[in-house]
Structures are given as structure tokens and as C-alpha cells.
Length: 192
Image 1 (tube, rainbow, N blue to C red):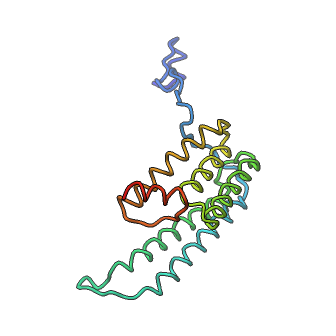
Image 2 (tube, helix red, strand yellow):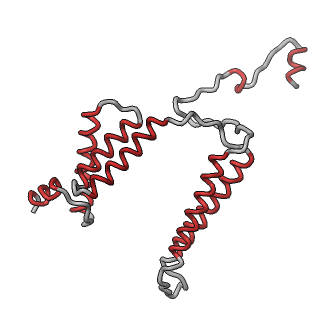
Image 3 (cartoon, rainbow, N blue to C red):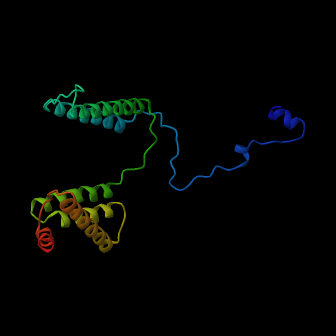
């Protein structure tokens, strides 16, 4: 019996989808409709992905060949990664050309400025000999500010704690060398 027949018979039966409201959690992904317009930013991202794949491929082509009984060695993995990036670039290009991407929010220039400042500050601090811990602390605090966090002292405290733990993990658990500064040298003296 169709819905029209139900109405004619005087009874109304609704499907469960019509009676129950759709419940969504805050921040849950939604599938939206594309804008239908060609997306220049999406095409630039696709071109960048193609460029990255080309860079990985050209770098991998210079690796020495280590053949084993399987007829290939670990040098095959960069080629596989480059091929995967090409697939993603093609999907991105087609979606951008067809206008399948949703409209994006307006660019947050202030947040972008804080991120650029964070990266520049870390690079300058590492080259000036400040060391990994202090440079990464500043990076964390400025990046947190870019995302709207205004509790600056707390940001620095969290950044310092995380940077110190990462330094200890990389230096003493993994045996990797990180840029040294006065703080790192003091920690090395304490832990010897």
C-alpha cells in the first residue's frame, strides 16, 4: 500500500526516517553538496600533489639498487608512495574541476600570520643555537595562539613540558641527536 493509499484510507503511517529527527554530534562530518563551480584552490592543491610525487619519484630514481631474491629492495617504497600521491592528485583535480568541493570558510589571515611567525621563530632560534626545547616551546605557544588560545603562560608551560619529553625520548630512548642549546647541555650533564 502506498502513502497515498494510506491517506485515502484515513490512516497515516510514517516511516521511521520521517518520524525521528536526525541526531548529529557537534563537529560530526557531514556530506554537503559541492558548489558546482571550478575550485582554483583545489586545482592548485592537485598541481602541488603532482609536483610532490614528481619530486619523490626523481629522488627515488637516484637510490642505489639493492636486488635480492625477490628482485626488488626497499627502494621500491618511494615509487609506491609517489604513485599513491598521483592517484590522490588525480582525484583532487577531477573533484576541483567538477566543482565537487564544498564552499570553505573565509581565510583566517591572523591565524595564518601566527603560524608563519611560529615557524620562522623556530628556524631562527635553532640556527642561533637556542636549542630544540626552547625553540619548540615557542613554536607550540605561537601555534596555540594561531588557533585562538589566549592563555599564554599555560601555552608556554605545555610547550616546554612536551618539548622536554620529546627531547628526552629522542635523545635517550632513540639515540637521535637534536639541536643543542644551553638547556639541552644542562640536561645532558644531569643525566650522565
